[in-house]
Length: 168
Image 1: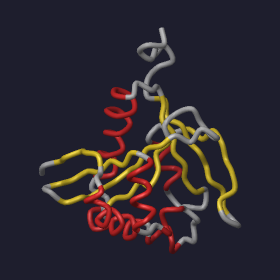
Image 2: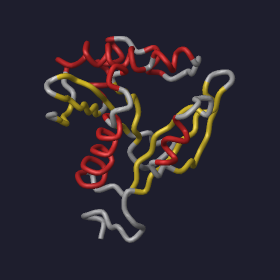
Image 3: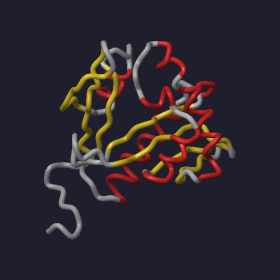
Protein backbone atom coordinates (compact mmCIF):
# COMPACT_ATOMS: atom_id res chain seq x y z
CA UNK A 1 0.00 0.00 0.00
CA UNK A 2 1.41 3.36 -1.04
CA UNK A 3 1.22 6.10 1.64
CA UNK A 4 1.65 9.76 0.69
CA UNK A 5 1.78 12.51 3.30
CA UNK A 6 1.24 16.01 1.94
CA UNK A 7 -0.24 19.42 2.51
CA UNK A 8 -3.87 19.73 1.51
CA UNK A 9 -4.70 22.08 -1.36
CA UNK A 10 -7.80 23.93 -2.47
CA UNK A 11 -8.48 21.04 -4.85
CA UNK A 12 -8.95 18.84 -1.77
CA UNK A 13 -11.61 21.05 -0.14
CA UNK A 14 -14.70 19.08 -1.17
CA UNK A 15 -13.05 15.73 -0.41
CA UNK A 16 -11.94 17.05 2.98
CA UNK A 17 -15.47 18.22 3.74
CA UNK A 18 -16.84 14.78 2.88
CA UNK A 19 -14.18 13.03 4.98
CA UNK A 20 -14.68 15.30 8.01
CA UNK A 21 -18.47 15.09 7.76
CA UNK A 22 -18.39 11.28 7.73
CA UNK A 23 -15.66 10.97 10.37
CA UNK A 24 -17.40 13.33 12.80
CA UNK A 25 -20.82 11.67 12.47
CA UNK A 26 -20.25 9.68 15.67
CA UNK A 27 -19.18 12.88 17.47
CA UNK A 28 -22.42 14.57 16.36
CA UNK A 29 -24.36 11.56 17.66
CA UNK A 30 -22.70 12.05 21.08
CA UNK A 31 -23.75 15.73 21.00
CA UNK A 32 -20.17 16.94 21.40
CA UNK A 33 -19.75 20.58 20.37
CA UNK A 34 -16.60 20.31 18.23
CA UNK A 35 -16.44 22.91 15.47
CA UNK A 36 -15.71 20.15 12.96
CA UNK A 37 -19.15 18.63 13.54
CA UNK A 38 -20.65 21.67 11.81
CA UNK A 39 -18.00 22.07 9.09
CA UNK A 40 -19.08 23.40 5.73
CA UNK A 41 -17.13 24.11 2.55
CA UNK A 42 -16.42 27.70 3.59
CA UNK A 43 -14.94 26.54 6.91
CA UNK A 44 -12.77 23.99 5.10
CA UNK A 45 -11.54 26.66 2.68
CA UNK A 46 -10.85 29.09 5.55
CA UNK A 47 -8.84 26.38 7.31
CA UNK A 48 -6.81 25.75 4.15
CA UNK A 49 -6.12 29.48 3.82
CA UNK A 50 -5.39 30.35 7.45
CA UNK A 51 -3.76 27.20 8.85
CA UNK A 52 -1.85 24.11 7.78
CA UNK A 53 -3.77 21.01 6.82
CA UNK A 54 -2.08 17.66 6.23
CA UNK A 55 -3.54 14.62 4.52
CA UNK A 56 -2.61 10.99 4.17
CA UNK A 57 -3.36 9.39 0.84
CA UNK A 58 -3.29 5.67 0.27
CA UNK A 59 -3.16 4.54 -3.34
CA UNK A 60 -4.39 7.96 -4.47
CA UNK A 61 -7.35 8.20 -2.05
CA UNK A 62 -7.47 10.73 0.75
CA UNK A 63 -7.96 8.65 3.92
CA UNK A 64 -7.06 10.95 6.83
CA UNK A 65 -6.49 14.58 7.68
CA UNK A 66 -5.23 16.69 10.56
CA UNK A 67 -4.69 20.43 10.83
CA UNK A 68 -2.10 22.45 12.69
CA UNK A 69 -2.36 26.00 14.02
CA UNK A 70 -1.31 28.24 16.85
CA UNK A 71 -3.63 28.67 19.81
CA UNK A 72 -1.72 31.31 21.73
CA UNK A 73 -4.46 31.89 24.29
CA UNK A 74 -3.90 28.33 25.55
CA UNK A 75 -0.39 27.18 24.60
CA UNK A 76 2.91 28.21 23.07
CA UNK A 77 3.13 24.86 21.25
CA UNK A 78 1.51 23.91 17.93
CA UNK A 79 -2.11 22.80 18.28
CA UNK A 80 -3.54 19.84 16.32
CA UNK A 81 -7.23 19.77 15.41
CA UNK A 82 -9.78 18.53 12.88
CA UNK A 83 -8.23 15.06 13.03
CA UNK A 84 -10.32 12.73 10.88
CA UNK A 85 -9.97 9.26 9.41
CA UNK A 86 -12.22 7.79 6.74
CA UNK A 87 -14.70 5.71 8.80
CA UNK A 88 -14.63 2.99 6.13
CA UNK A 89 -10.93 2.54 6.96
CA UNK A 90 -11.11 2.89 10.75
CA UNK A 91 -9.09 0.67 13.08
CA UNK A 92 -6.30 0.06 10.58
CA UNK A 93 -3.68 2.37 12.10
CA UNK A 94 -4.23 5.09 9.50
CA UNK A 95 -4.86 7.81 12.07
CA UNK A 96 -1.82 6.73 14.07
CA UNK A 97 0.36 6.98 10.95
CA UNK A 98 -0.76 10.51 10.16
CA UNK A 99 -0.57 11.67 13.77
CA UNK A 100 2.95 10.26 14.15
CA UNK A 101 4.03 11.89 10.87
CA UNK A 102 2.81 15.33 11.98
CA UNK A 103 4.19 14.95 15.52
CA UNK A 104 7.63 13.77 14.43
CA UNK A 105 8.32 14.95 10.89
CA UNK A 106 6.47 18.26 10.97
CA UNK A 107 6.48 19.51 14.56
CA UNK A 108 9.65 17.96 15.98
CA UNK A 109 11.95 17.72 12.95
CA UNK A 110 10.81 20.54 10.64
CA UNK A 111 9.42 23.16 13.02
CA UNK A 112 11.90 22.03 15.70
CA UNK A 113 9.40 22.45 18.51
CA UNK A 114 9.75 20.14 21.52
CA UNK A 115 6.03 19.56 22.19
CA UNK A 116 2.63 19.48 20.54
CA UNK A 117 -0.89 19.96 21.88
CA UNK A 118 -4.45 18.94 21.04
CA UNK A 119 -7.82 18.87 22.77
CA UNK A 120 -10.70 16.46 23.14
CA UNK A 121 -14.00 16.10 24.91
CA UNK A 122 -14.12 14.66 28.39
CA UNK A 123 -17.56 13.28 27.42
CA UNK A 124 -16.21 11.19 24.51
CA UNK A 125 -16.07 7.51 25.55
CA UNK A 126 -12.52 6.72 24.35
CA UNK A 127 -10.64 9.66 22.79
CA UNK A 128 -9.13 11.02 26.00
CA UNK A 129 -7.72 7.66 27.05
CA UNK A 130 -6.46 7.01 23.51
CA UNK A 131 -4.46 10.24 23.50
CA UNK A 132 -3.13 9.51 26.99
CA UNK A 133 -1.92 6.09 25.79
CA UNK A 134 -0.09 7.93 22.98
CA UNK A 135 1.81 10.00 25.54
CA UNK A 136 -0.41 13.08 25.80
CA UNK A 137 -0.89 14.60 29.27
CA UNK A 138 -3.80 16.90 30.25
CA UNK A 139 -2.73 20.44 31.18
CA UNK A 140 -5.81 22.67 30.90
CA UNK A 141 -9.61 22.42 30.74
CA UNK A 142 -12.45 24.71 29.73
CA UNK A 143 -16.18 24.42 29.10
CA UNK A 144 -17.32 22.79 25.87
CA UNK A 145 -21.00 23.26 25.20
CA UNK A 146 -23.52 23.06 28.02
CA UNK A 147 -22.54 19.73 29.57
CA UNK A 148 -19.00 18.93 28.56
CA UNK A 149 -15.37 19.87 29.18
CA UNK A 150 -12.67 20.40 26.57
CA UNK A 151 -9.45 18.80 27.81
CA UNK A 152 -6.21 20.17 26.38
CA UNK A 153 -3.32 17.73 26.28
CA UNK A 154 0.41 18.13 25.58
CA UNK A 155 2.90 15.59 24.30
CA UNK A 156 6.61 16.12 24.84
CA UNK A 157 8.33 15.16 21.58
CA UNK A 158 11.92 15.55 22.77
CA UNK A 159 13.66 15.62 26.15
CA UNK A 160 14.03 18.70 28.29
CA UNK A 161 17.61 19.19 27.06
CA UNK A 162 16.33 20.01 23.57
CA UNK A 163 17.48 23.32 22.09
CA UNK A 164 15.66 24.90 19.16
CA UNK A 165 18.08 26.02 16.44
CA UNK A 166 18.76 29.72 16.55
CA UNK A 167 17.76 29.95 20.21
CA UNK A 168 21.17 28.97 21.59
